[in-house]
Length: 338
Ligand SMILES: Cc1cc2nc3c(=O)[nH]c(=O)nc-3n(C[C@H](O)[C@H](O)[C@H](O)COP(=O)(O)OP(=O)(O)OC[C@H]3O[C@@H](n4cnc5c(N)ncnc54)[C@H](O)[C@@H]3O)c2cc1C
Image (cartoon, rainbow, N blue to C red; front, side):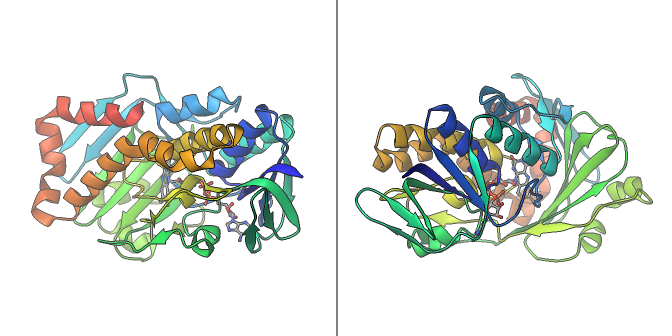
């Protein structure tokens, strides 16, 4: 019998598989798409996220960034990381790197659709495959999470993200976050000749329409060749528990607040490590509590900023207040960076 079956070959699933294989577990990953897999993402890895990947031997190619800049029509404030650089990495490049490391450490990757999941006291069955444990890393709207009854109803504003790449040399060595009336645009340098722009908003819509809210940014990008758009959402996903019997939820499947602070992959990699530790200890029941402790700071900061950003008069003060209090802004950025 397989030790660990991982449903989903995104960053959360592959990182889980790499941890497991390095710990000596026979590990199989199943995903409906062949790698390298693309997805709507801001593609900014925070400094602690870069370190998590280096620790499991993943070689990264991208463009370093030194901090975060917030901008609105009249204000601008920069904060630099104290704990190393972040890295902008094109999603397909990250996927290739994770696939390469997974293959090196002996993970078997199967192309296929994840079917119905059933379990007994000693194993989990998913389609034709049977394993001692299942890590469900099947994304934001995880079908496995739903089938196990682990979804909770979401409260508050729903938000969506849409991303586009432009062939233009990065003009900043930070990730720039442009704040408009009810929308944010993130610019992440991902190569010497390319930036990614991710837009977050509480309505679905076309990238070009959203860009009308960002005059200075639209002017800078005007005429630059660009790739196709990719969208995702609704973003917020509340989860009752990250473990049910021998099934552990990892990555976005484990719950998600928002892309506002670029923490998704850091939490996914932290969860991957904890899930494998729980499996090695044969203590899946401990995983949920450990996951909540690991991710608490990031989830609280993201939820707090999201809440503030949803109240119009407070939202208008976010960038002016950050630029009036740059040390406070720097402190918050560095709480998210390590
Ligand atoms: C607009 C936007 C911007 C973001 N910006 C950042 C950022 O700058 N930095 C950051 O760290 N994070 C960011 N994130 C979050 C980040 O993208 C996610 O946290 C990350 O992709 C989670 O990886 P995952 O492996 O859990 O899920 P996914 O990458 O979604 O992988 C899930 C996999 O499961 C597979 N799958 C699902 N269902 C099935 C099925 N039934 N059968 C077979 N296969 C299946 C899918 O094919 C997919 O490959 C952003 C997200 C969005 C939406």
